[in-house]
Structures are given as C-alpha cells and as structure tokens.
Image (tube, rainbow, N blue to C red; front, side, top):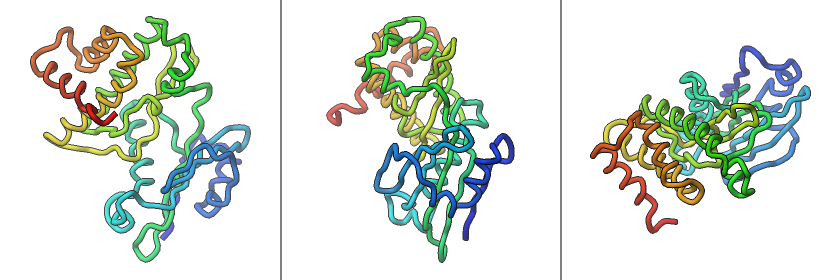
Length: 249
C-alpha cells in the first residue's frame, strides 16, 4: 500500500510534478545535508525554490515500529501539521507519505519548503553571532519562544527534542522564530506530560545557561508561565529543570 499526498494549494507546478509520487521522490538527486541510520535529508532545487527531502528507510529505533504504532516519518509530518494548525511558525509541509508491504513499513518521505534567510540558534552560538549580545534582539526571540513552547504544551504536546538547533530565526525586522524537526514529539497526560515538559525546558536551558544571563533565562520562564513572579510550584519545576541533565552532559 502506497499512501502519498501533495499539498492541495500553493505548490509550484514544477514541484508538484517532481514530488508527484513516492517513487519519484526516492529517485531525486540533491545535496545531502544529513544522514542517520533511519533517514537521509537532501536539499533540492525545483522551480527556483529550495526544498528539504527527508527519506526514511526505517520506521523507528524500536523494530516493532515497522508493524505497530506511528512510524517516525508519520510522526514527523503529523507533528509539523499540528504546529501549523496551532499557529506555531514552522516549515511548510508540501508532500508526505509512506509505503507498506504486507502490513509492514517499507519506506516513507517528508518534503518541506525551505524557510528562506534563516539560521538555527545553535549555529548562531557556535559562530559568536553579534545578535546574541543585543538584549533587545534576545528579548524578542525569548518572548516568541516562550509563546511557542506554552502553546505547544497547552495542547498536552511535548517536543521531546527541543534544542536550539531545532529553532530557526530569520533576518526580518523584527525577527521571526520557527520550530522545526519533531519526529519524536507526542501527546502526553498527567505525570508523563509534566515530565516531558520539564525535559523540553531542560533541553532549551542546556545551551541557554552558557549563552544567556540568569535574568534572561528567568524572563523566559516567567513569559512561558505567564506570571510576574515565581510561586512555590514554579520553583519546584525549575529545580527539576536545572538538575534534569546532571551527570549526563
């Protein structure tokens, strides 16, 4: 069974033809920008626009994913579409789908349009970008990130890999922040959701504690929590955030 879909609007005719079938997508040539045991990411140019083609040949790290539950590629395209539905800026999904044989996953792909003139926040840190010394710029990005994270968590959803490399910022004025790359995110309830929320916040703070001041980090959390001061529950959560990766870094 081959389940392949194209975006219903806004797709360039040349791209619609290039991405028409899963077979065509797996035949594409392009610049390889990433690879892991489950997938390969190519950057291709079609109709004068760049796209990222993520091709999966594995369903997930757990071998049972081939037969049971959501595959990694399905989780990724569904999660990005959730973000768009919630008003969270993210990459536009233009084509997606997977192929199964005898009920088991065989291969799948996800194609997103490039977000032009963007860089990930981790790269800005590695390059000592001067914008990181601009308090006004940091405040604007921090406020957007707090709103994005709060919106995501309000739906009972946790990203599970909320790292600076998965946050893109453009060069507009004011700059706009985008959340990308979420194959391991999902919906949780009760204590499982609370644990995943702490993990998301701790992932963000792994780089923030070396790149931002304590005041800036506190301002982010207060924005995220929608409060002016920390209460006892916030202090308890922050202790868990600050110790989450102790002994694992």
